[in-house]
Image (cartoon, rainbow, N blue to C red; front, side, top):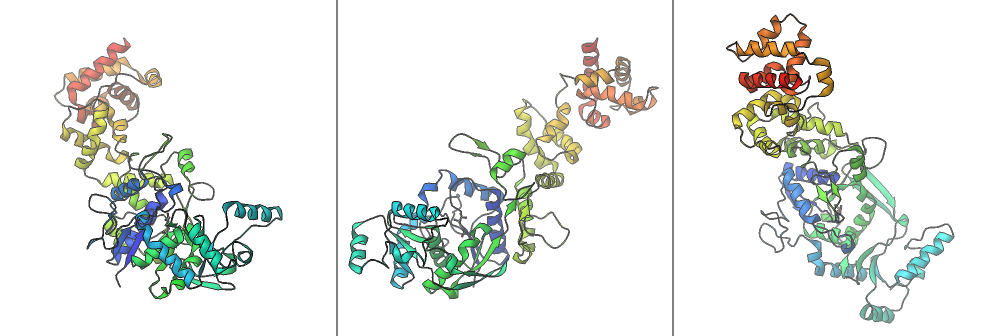
Length: 506
Ligand code: GLU
């Protein structure tokens, strides 16, 4: 049987990095097994729909190099009409609306579900009553026999209400006294007593839409999904999902399940949240997101991360290869990934490690590729007329020090513009007119571009000489090696800078 997995996000906002990790693990699993990776949009909860979220999800996956085999066409649009390549279209659940009712009705007919007519007010009153008695109201085997549903009403009254009213639902009838036995590829065997679970709503007459549970099971079945790989927050739904497969008689083709561990905060305990990112200054979203109130959240892409580094660091959050290797390209991940090596416990996110990954990728990149990325940064600083070969030379000299492409500017600004401002405390400490004047003279009278001979032969301590010279060349006393600066800017420019500082300070 061909492996078919799906990523099934709800477009309720930007995809969190945990969501991208779920997509990535699905993708790796599919590709490793020569299977298909499907993108399905679960948008049946219209109250939580956020405009732009679907496009965001698609763009984020494309940025990571995760391209679905089904569900999205080459232009990055969700496919709406079935074709040979996309046989199960549409892949957006809101467009599959007419499919679901018959499945819910099928469960009513087989005695696994029932019509419920309770009004929102009456359920609210039940909840309040239970709360006053220190209990929690649950719609289940204990309460269903006294509530307003097709199990308690006559067949005629039920029919009358189905035909004449629109605020009813179809609820799953949890079997009494059943222990649901389940298997998870990461967590092993799990058993849950169904008496602890409630009769979940499967379909709502009001908007004629299924809830997540029904739509998810029906679509996984119709789309021939073989493995469901999703976040741990869905583990509590697993018993219901098992029972739904059973109620439909689909046990033989039921997918296998794998629930991924949570991503945890860098400090303390608990789930990684958007607020942690804002508080500790790192992105939790793949791409920048601006919400309806105009509030902006950082994105890895806009913060200067390489997609390969982001994918690599995500892969390592919860999975380990069982070796010391930390750097993996996407094809290498496809090769090495295994669900058996995904841990059960939450994976602590370390923002410093994320930066380390970017630095490692930056170190490995050819200078020409980095130059291409750095040119717009230079343009942002008003430097447009610049020789690409020169930019590459600067990058090769500074590559080991940078974490992000934008760092090249901070590190090597002085190789593009002469300092206008000088760090005052460095001036106070290191400004020595006689050294700078002598260095200028030595350069002017020499036929080389280097100051090495001058620094070596000068009678003052080497540190003092170098600090004064670096101050004149860069505006501060620390930074690049003098030899590197000279190698880039050359003799004439150095002489100009020495002269400038001498004049400025006189
Ligand atoms: N729509 C669910 C979500 O947003 C999908 C859960 C699943 O993969 O079954 O996460």
